[in-house]
Image (cartoon, rainbow, N blue to C red; front, side, top):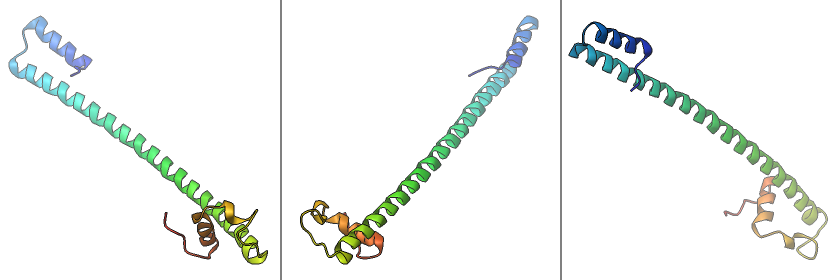
Amino acid sequence: MEVRGSERDEAMSHTDDKPLSKQSARQLARRAALDAQAKMRAQRVEREKRLSARGVEVMVALAQRDELVRRCEQRAGEALHQMTAVEGAGPGPGTVERVDDRRPCRVRHARGGLRPVPG
């Protein structure tokens, strides 16, 4: 518990004149405890504000990442469509065999074609 300067001065002035009564000592101790609790509460509120702000930053960054991924998958889906449907290229050397099984489906879905495969 932290006793504020004025309370400490008040307590000392009582010791110079006469000892504090039990009631006065209790009141000073209670005030010091309440002040310490108020200070701790204020610190917790400030910490919660900081954490909340960081949480917003995290969510914004993740949303930006998701949008970027969505755009990239859409471009890849369009390129895959051009390779397969327009150019007539099938799985073979230099085409889609280098792409794992889930990726073409996911990028086709991003283009508006097939449903994505879970996973």
